[in-house]
Image (cartoon, rainbow, N blue to C red; front, side, top):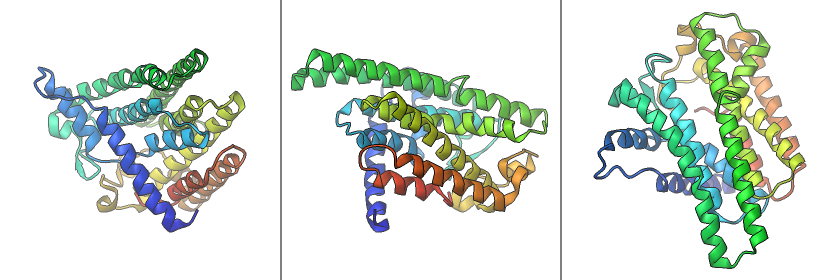
Length: 316
């Protein structure tokens, strides 16, 4: 795909993902619990690449999915990603005050309300994802879908929910966060295997979920889902290596968050273990492997290829 065409298409798809995410946020008006809803909405609306919902939708389209029941999962994955950032920023964890160029949630609303906002986003993500069942029923009635097709779609949504829960929980993102917190608090000297465990689970797990959920909802087969999971691993680990690099070579104005915190906190990262040059080389290798795996999948993946390439060497 031509680079100029990709930039136009990326803007269009990012804006579409943004609209979908916003559509599913809770309405705090006239609610006694409006404070937590406002903090939840603030956390999501202060910005973001919307990369994860975009990955779900584009994978879904690659496998020729056309229905709208993918949309609740797009919103749900962004809620889960955002909750993890809200909790990451808390004083008891990273104690960050700046996120996407704005006050972090705890800085604006206090750490107690930020904690509740994170809890709210996590639970509301599953409430939102389950709205896909309502859309299946609605679309089935509107287009006279056969009972067999409707049952198949329900089954796909159930599988997607399982993936979402697995990749976000103690065997996924939370598990990676656990070792990351212990390593920092106890000043552990991590092995490369342990560091990759953190990167795979803390960052790559949700990206794997995006590829897998998009494929499952569109009817991809078991081997195709396994390939998508591997692509998600490569993209996710490369993404985290770039984050580690940006903490060293980036600047606060461009990133919209504080830099140099890893070194200040004595935190071990991919860069401290391998250095800048090797980290950049490994990021490139993982990206190239992901692109190679993508070639073996059906559908048009020109945009997905450019999207993955755009993450390589990103500046924010």
